[in-house]
Image 1 (cartoon, rainbow, N blue to C red):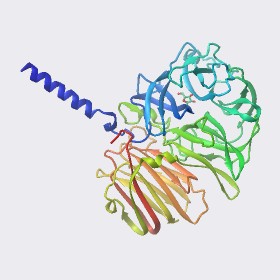
Image 2 (image 1 turned 90 degrees about the vertical axis):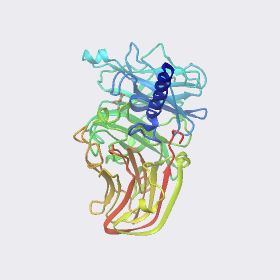
Image 3 (image 1 turned 60 degrees about the horizontal axis):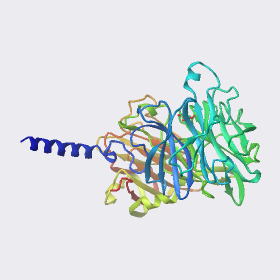
Image 4 (image 1 turned 120 degrees about the vertical axis):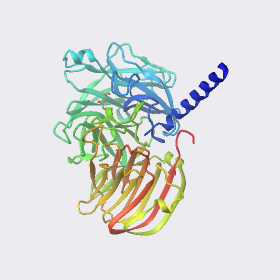
Length: 500
Ligand code: FRU
């Protein structure tokens, strides 16, 4: 009898454990990176080293809300299937470990060893902050001689002391080949300050940028500076995240296009441009050491509501990794992005429909053998007239992604998307300008169970939004009261990274 009870308990606990598996948790992204449990924000220290992508991230392992920051760590061969690794950096007597970057010190400039991985991050001292000192954020370094497994903080930290600026953080470091030096791009309150160093330990100020340029609705954070090719010419891109003050409220990332000579960044144009017009792509920066590829991942949330979103055991995810490139429209240069080519390997079972005429409503789900809540949907050469793509469920929740011709805007409307009452500003319609001048519209949607990423006009206009339906969306409808034609529609399922 006792044995039977024990056996029953054992079976129940196995069943319970099974039903609690990560992949079955409500709103758990199925192909986006998310921490196993607890709080995550910005991606940090992203670097490619010996065939492995490293993702570190702002992490608080004791709660599902923000707290003393650590660097969580995960590794991957394709930026989609990630292996969780032990925490890489813990808070210490100098403070919490805030955002930063990582490089591979190929020439052993720092003397830690040839090919050492070096992390450059902000030490944020909570005691100094509480005491209302202004110098509580300083830059420090740590190194790893075993390919990122274990990290040693440099004994001479901090390597760049605060000169008296309250917001002094998020160092992004790159090797500036032409002058054999490291360049640090640092967010310093309402501007960017560039520093340089021969050895990652001694830093000299080079210049400042942006006090009177770009958006200033909030503090500047998490910058990145990198070159991209445009018709054989090297053009520099400066990313600057800002919170609040984004185009649709809360956190967002603006960018500047220009020239960088190792000392000064000179923008070509002064208008404010946004890398992503949705509300859920923040603090995005690019991987170091990826040769001629430039790959970005962002934090798929927004400080406006990140700490109250209705997920239970963990909070937030990263965007899909995106390849960045430049596009010219009417003599202006824009930053465009698309999912990395590795994502194609995640695609399964595609259905193509050609030459569709839509008047009022087209139930795409009825044309497909399967509809799931994970898919990539590409529409090619749509008449540039009002239309929308509606994801919905039987509970009456719907997420509407569309184009408004009169305003020449794309939009994502999540006012009726499901659970919306956790924060007053969440249930909104977000808009983004259409920048392309081509006659017809082509776009790709990448949808996971709780997020959608819209890449319109070859990634010239991008929007990322999260949502929390009461039940997963299973129906896709395309609507157009004015009528549109679509030359080609391709629907593809997306594999889960959890092995099913
Ligand atoms: C951006 C940010 C950074 C900071 C980190 C703290 O989201 O505020 O500026 O380093 O988060 O977690």
